[in-house]
Image (cartoon, rainbow, N blue to C red; front, top):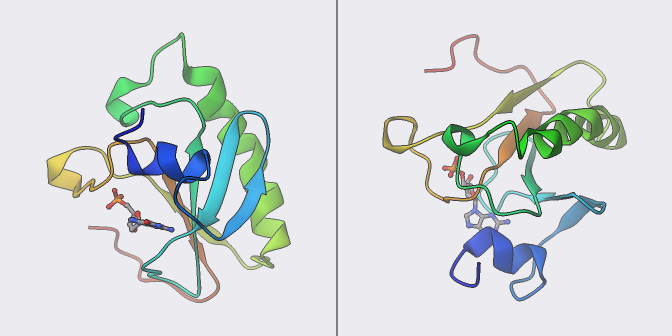
Length: 113
Ligand code: DGP
């Protein structure tokens, strides 16, 4: 989608600090990091949010969770990490392209909301 920020990052129209890419997935550093390591992991296929995951497109979501350990290891997150997806207005989703925040690099708060 040409009007989608993350689609434009994936296709290279908008520069990003890429940390991982394969045929299904693109991962890059968040422009506004909320932890020492803050990476966004997105499917190359445009899926608007977690509310739009279906039996037809869920394989890419499974693949994202398969590559998260590799990205976390590459980032040195040996003491743990957090994976979050914000979905819809109540969760303050600001970019309508499914993405998983990978956060780590230090002790985090024990509350998530
Ligand atoms: P969310 O609020 O869950 O939709 O997260 C969107 C994230 O996207 C937010 O943490 C900031 C990040 N972000 C927004 N615009 C850009 C951008 O142009 N480049 C990068 N690298 N990250 C961005």
